Image (tube, rainbow, N blue to C red; front, side):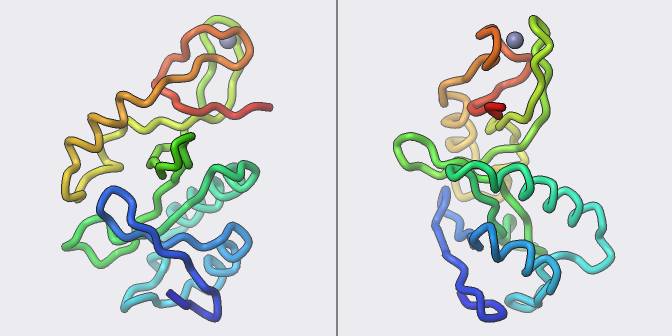
Length: 159
Ligand SMILES: [Zn+2]
């Protein structure tokens, strides 16, 4: 897909087409807010959507395995949705919610990736199977003390 002269990669993730601008083009696209396939990329006047998207991009652009995509999450909904993806070791692109956790044992805190949020999968052709598979991805522990974290995480920020 070409938008405002930017070439945007398309990927099929969990049976759904998602659009993957490179991290450099993302900020320009947010500034331009183009109409894509009949709908503004960001709903005009939605500062909160823009704020969350910019925050996610700022954090995730530091990690080459991370990306942020836009897609039509529900077949019946025109609006674009934004989803974070991590490339797992076997190459699969996995959806996740970006969270900020504090280790209850040592006080480490940082961003983490939680793939077990049902909203991430709503509207997919096989949402239950994909969500079940997300719960089977190996968890990571606190990067500082090695103990369990308070929420499911398959990645933590290493700072
Ligand atoms: Zn810890």
